[in-house]
Image (cartoon, rainbow, N blue to C red; front, side):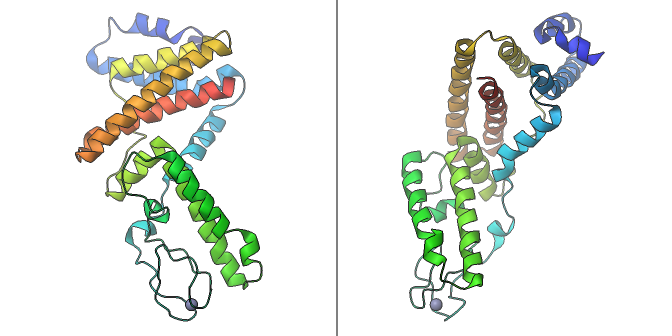
Length: 267
Ligand SMILES: [Zn+2]
């Protein structure tokens, strides 16, 4: 029954539903419709089931599950092998005995790349620093090392990759920097503003009905504008430590990013 209902345009359902609904039931109706549209969107496209949608979503959000130890670890200050004092943070290789060091979880992702902890960064600069790390952690450089050190190098490498992907993307960067302040981004919080819910559903409907790639690209450009707008809003809110507003910006970015992902799948 739901499925048949969903096959009619969502905005038509909304138009039928909205005028007579009270404020409370209007919110819950919209939320029900939205969650139904989110889970059925994939199967309507015929490409993926809601489970795949969830997996993909979590794949994207995978970088957001930051290790808790990151926020409470003590930094690695001495070489595990010769006890020399670490000369640089994060401590990768001991200058004295050349031993590869374990991951320093106290160094946050910004420190890994020597970047100032702020929400807007130059991605080109980040890419250059990431490439330098890749050279330092190249498997050829550790092939003659002990198994323990090879393991350390692999862990270092995995962490640098996580750090790069988290910081390169405006949404995951925003979520991460908020978390470093001890604030939960709450990006999965249900949106309850009818205006925004209507906009999201109409956009999804437009994506489903887009006749060609040109139409999809147009919607994609709009989503990109919205993402950039809310990314700037986040930066302003974060700078003034208005974490409530920062969270709102993250929730908006999360929704626009998802629509964008659906468009990419169809292009
Ligand atoms: Zn050493």
